[in-house]
Image (cartoon, rainbow, N blue to C red; front, side, top):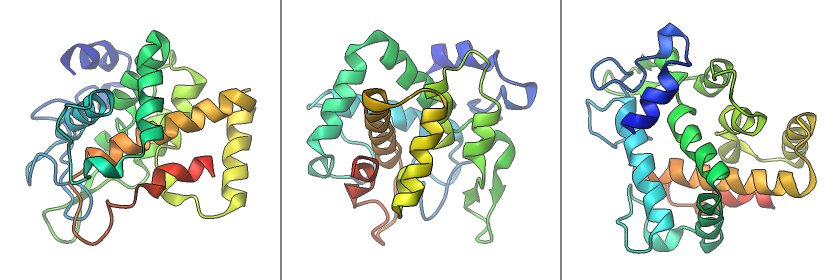
Amino acid sequence: LEMGYEQVKGELPAAYQDYLDEKEGPFHYNAQWHHEGGLKARLRDHILAQFAALRYLLDDNADVQGELEKNQVPQEVRQWAREVAQNPDTLKLLIRWILLHDVGKATTTAVKEDHISYRSWGHEQRSYEVLPGSASPLLKLSVKNHLTAFNLKQAEQFAALAAEYAHESITGDAFVKAMEFVAVTTTIDLMSSQLDDNGNYGNMETVAKPMI
C-alpha cells in the first residue's frame, strides 16, 4: 500500500493527495455497508482490506476478509483474478484500480443522519474526474463504473455500458475481458466490506450481472 500510494498521490490534485493518510484521509465507517476498521475507520482501512481480499482470491489458504464465506465467491471470478495477476500489465492495472477507485471520497464524504456513518455520494464520478492523465481508458472506465454491477437491472443499461466501452475501442473479446475485470473488482469491493445482516452482502450474483 505505502509504495503504491507514494507513486500515485503525486499525480493527483492537491485536494486529493492525503486521501489514504492515516490521520487526514476521509472517514469511512458506514453502519450499512462498511464495518472494516471500526467506527473510526478511514478510507485507508477499506483499501487495506481490498488488498487482503485480493490475496484471498489468489491464494486458497488465505483468510477471507469481510463476512463473505469462501464458498460464496464464484470459481470463475477466482480464475479471472488469477489470470489478471499472471499478466504484469493487468496486475498493475488492478493495483492502480484498488488504490484509485475511491479517491473521490476525499471531497464527497459527509456524515450521515445517524452521526456515526459516512456517505460519499457521487464519489465514483469524482474519482474518474481526478484520475492521473496517465490512466488508461480501461482504468478510467473501470473506476467510473465500479458501482455498475450493483445497479444493472435492465438490458438497456448494459447496452449503454457497452457503448461507453466501445467509444474507447474496447469491444469484442476485449469487452468480455473488461467485464471479467469488473467482476473481479466488484468481488474485491464486496469482500473488503463488513456488511450488515440484512442480506446486503451475501448474494454474489451481483458480480455475474455484467456477464449475463
